[in-house]
Length: 70
Image 1 (tube, rainbow, N blue to C red):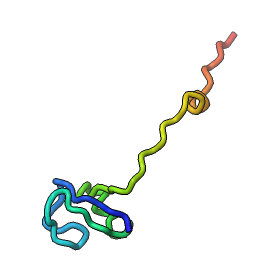
Image 2: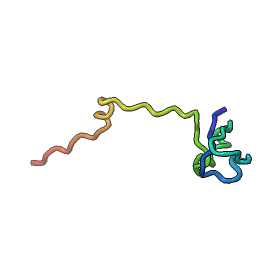
Image 3: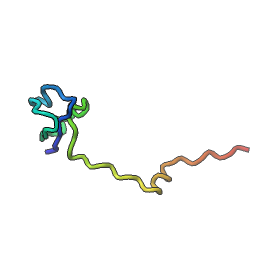
Image 4: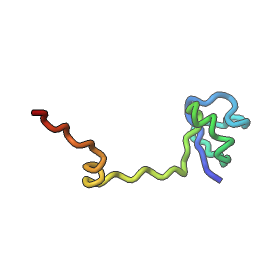
């Protein structure tokens, strides 16, 4: 199951459980944690960082410069 850490913005209850302190790790399903993550009360711990784009990928993503009109 994915793991989530309680943040400092959490209230007394987090995902139906008593808040036992900042940094406490909870194992919840994505569905159970969805709303609390959206609120900022939980932070996902098992999320992999996005890969950085290479120069060629960045160049391919840029639209072509507008051509000069005659």
